[in-house]
Image (tube, rainbow, N blue to C red):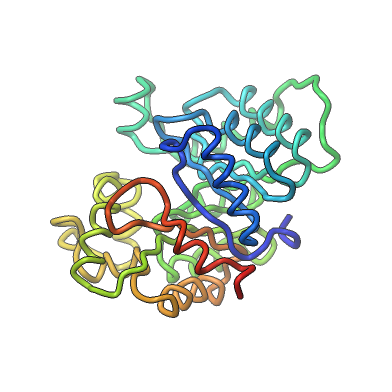
Length: 294
């Protein structure tokens, strides 16, 4: 899929959409020329179920989990979902897997949160050996790991087909490419916001960033990138906000996306934030940046 996945996709929450609205959104993303739609797993819909539905409502759009939580189901169940969607939508599914975060796993799900790299390695090994009797596609859907730091990035290249870093900078993309090599897929997420007023833009960006800055996996990664604890206060310092969220006019946003490509990204999935703080994506911004509009 490295040679067939397009360069630009969309990352979006769609749990606030009805099924019909979600299908219409996916059809618009496809019509705009984006190559993939990335859907997260948090406390809403089961990502595999909604992807199966949306794949049937579109013709060529690739769907990816960004990411599916390995604590949400055992390796055999995830392996079955991967093979089922790979069969139902050949060449149109990417399995993004991640270890989530201790509060999401221990507090919400009641599981013991274990060492992330060890747990992911074991999970992938058990997926590989899982028993499955259903029909399979000729080519298996690729697995990408929600990797941020060195050990998980290395694992993504050795035991999977690449990485899907989230809440990162173009500098992180360059570091990730150096670690995983040229053959592995690298698909970072980039939050974007069409707002040229710095006060309004940073206010909206901080609304988006607040939850993520409370999670240790993201904070530890940002510390490795050269930020410090002071940058995490009050919703994020200006320099951190500006590094994580690409805000400004169309050309400014396009330049940030290009920074990731220049740093080695195969595919960038953009998360179009809204100035009103609503979870739904800014569809006008997505249409403005649409590959078919260029």
